Length: 163
Image 1: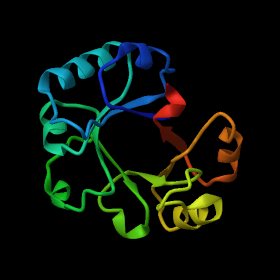
Image 2 (image 1 turned 120 degrees about the vertical axis):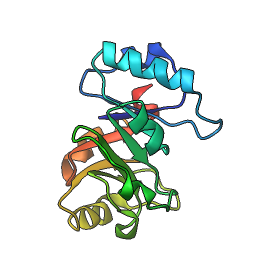
Image 3 (image 1 turned 180 degrees about the vertical axis):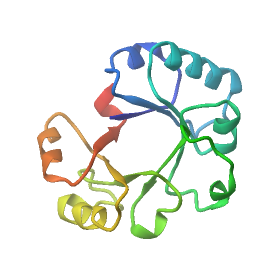
Image 4 (image 1 turned 180 degrees about the horizontal axis):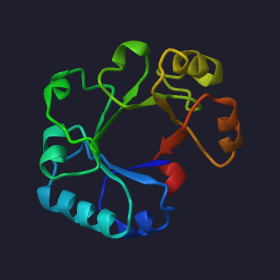
């Protein structure tokens, strides 16, 4: 399980089980180094994996568990960064073309009927195109959680599901 969070709030984090990784993504404001360090310390102390969105260089410099590349980031400079073996690069995609250099792929949107809507069948077709771990994303709720068993995925991610 992967929980996208946009602010440092321990109330939301503490409700998660230890198998939930935290992905900090705040696209509304510039990354605040103090907040990221607070996140890092809190997650390390409480045994959560912690990933920083859209800033691979900072995630490497702070020795985080990894970085998340959103699908709108079309740059490929992350392929040239020197990373440790434990550093995990994960990223989202809406098509096979958007998958470059990541170990885990977040495919969306499964259930949320927006412009990137895949649905169960198209999700499964896309997931067959890669041998990498696939994570389901988009519109996952307690009502459709059982439908994840129909998907060829290793886990799921979300925002509102975890709040």
